[in-house]
Length: 374
Ligand code: SF4
Image (tube, rainbow, N blue to C red; front, side, top):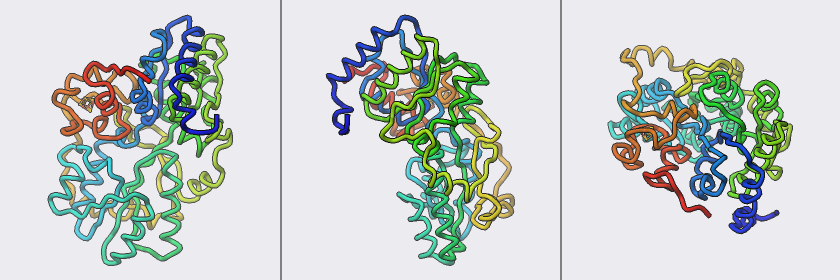
């Protein structure tokens, strides 16, 4: 197949679904790591297309959702500092922190601006030399190279009032942490397509080797995902788990060398705080020493300490986003889903984000969690 509409062909999709049904002889559980996959699975009714033996769970692959409340509180506190402009991608605006949100901070007078690229944030810094412009860096390996490029640009062009609060996270370490927790038994993982374009397939080799779990990297069209599930079922049925790429038009085993060089030039690996998982060692990226001038954590830690009161971070009451991100629960198991918590009045990040599992269930499946399929 060459064209995107071929990957959306419902007749072909049904044929692949039938092949999966023919192969699948025992109950298995698969996790799609990536929030983009969760949305595609719900949108195209893929859970209804595959046989009942194949159970699907969402994982921690929504960058907005996994941002810890305490990190969000820090971003909100930065927004309230005098002379600061916060720049960020849109989704995070509405995510509730412990006591406020970036959207509320903006309504209260803070200068918070939504940007569509990190380069826009650098331009805002250039246009406002008397202000400190902080970009809230949320995302995975996919986003990190573009943020790195913006920092390099700021250095080259002498933009000294540009900063990044790096809340960037790494995929393989959190997969390992999740598997080590062992809370949910998995037979296979649908590997994230966009992240793998950057890091390639080699970093997932530990999954079959150490845990005996199949891992197939998928694209985001319905046929991509069905072909990925087909390969996973084949591996699981044959008892030969391995890492495979079912997204050859996007992913090479070695990843994208240029993007990785950018990432490694500016960032170094550090621990990160994940919603639902807590601190996971070696699972985040912070600005390295060479570029430390641009590190908002370093530049504003003193000001933040004196401006913030010491109220502890708290999670929204009754919200099960943490359990959903660990694959322990589905959105339908949250008592607030669709009643108290809706996209118009979200309680937790999984209902806010365009990649959140609760938003996907609500948008495509309603309160019963079913979708008629392709
Ligand atoms: Fe949290 Fe709302 Fe999802 Fe429940 S439905 S887990 S409250 S985001």
